[in-house]
Image 1: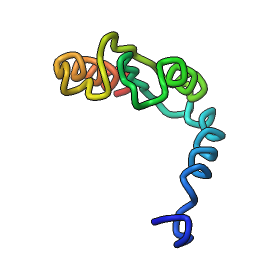
Image 2: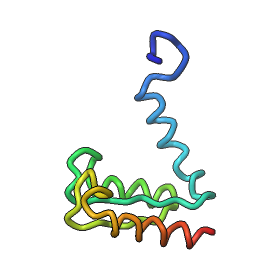
Image 3: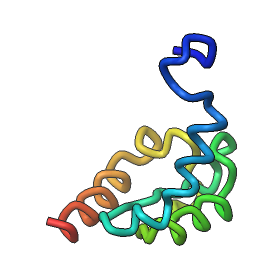
Length: 88
């Protein structure tokens, strides 16, 4: 759906609303995985700021790119399993 259909807000509006709701997200467990070589997500500093605003835990994967789970599946699984175990 697009802005023209009126069924969903425009992407910028959704993004702005999500940013305003980040502090409320801290009521739920969260994990932000930051791959330092990911050139598509806005960078490490932005991800860590978002995690802090949302009250989320963050894990930095040094030397990993956008496809971190495919690059190092064992590391990705370990990070996710540790997070899931901590909130179970």
